[in-house]
Image 1 (cartoon, helix red, strand yellow):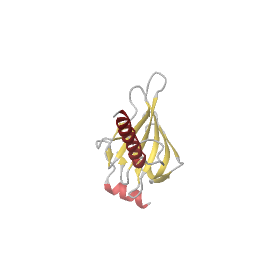
Image 2 (cartoon, helix red, strand yellow):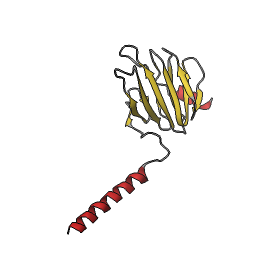
Image 3 (cartoon, one colour):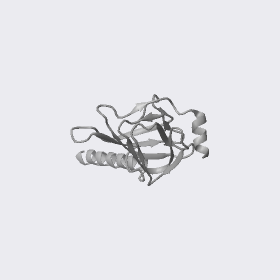
Image 4 (cartoon, one colour):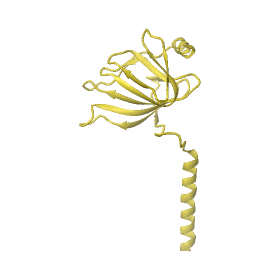
Length: 157
């Protein structure tokens, strides 16, 4: 009886491991994370926090996944932000400037208080690491959504 129970447990573990391996994308560096709020994002965007602000760090670091069509609202950072694109292709645009294509390997250094948005293109996923500094207790000021016209225009540049 004991052998049968051990065999059942071992088989269950193997099946669970195999299922997890089959569903995990081996090209991903970090897991997708949790869905981000539609208050600040359009489409399907996800955050996996990597480093939180604490006594040693006056910044946060997170992996942000944007499914095709997903993007941030317009926003600013009082102490700037750095984006490290680690997968796919996306868009970055500062207010009153032409949108730029950003792709794996690109580093975007966003100056403090610069109004901007970023996200995936309409047809490609994009993942970036966001390093965001704090000024006192604020790291982002969210503004209005990117309009469909602004987004369509950015995808045709």
